[in-house]
Length: 199
Image (cartoon, rainbow, N blue to C red; front, side, top):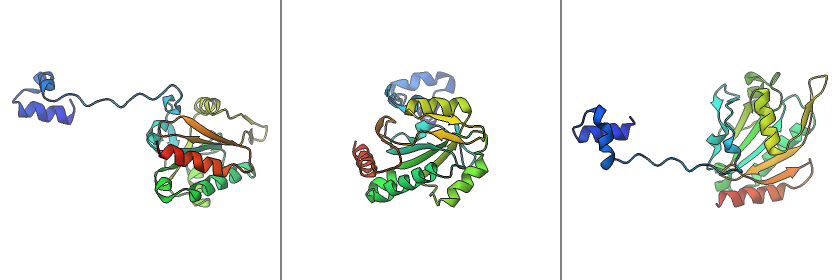
């Protein structure tokens, strides 16, 4: 029995066993609306943050999101993706910047441990209030990559060949924009984030 129902029961002088009778004056709170069939927030994987905490993508609901997949030992493409995401963040109007979240999800379920991801955050000065760094199991990584349209492959040295993609999600977790490659397209991404925030 939730706290509101328990309070109503007490006010009516009913025993907890008769709490159902309190529905006449204490309706149950409305459930959150279901996400759409196009929302990433249908994915039910539990990730782990660089602080070692469990995290579900649905926790991002209600905010515009800029998301990319990466791996911390990448020496070329991933640092450029992170740099571009930082530039997107810095270009946003302050009110939108404060609401938006920037998410990095690692391909490397073996080497990108919690401490290593945390060190990556510190190395790149990614504020904890606006940036979310995640690691997960191989099946969860594959599922998210498939939904985003990201292709990746681990080579013999444990490095990854991968698509270079920055994805913008609206507050319901639907893909509204993707910047492919490593050149240009940041203005369009900024516009997509601002438009999503206005919904």
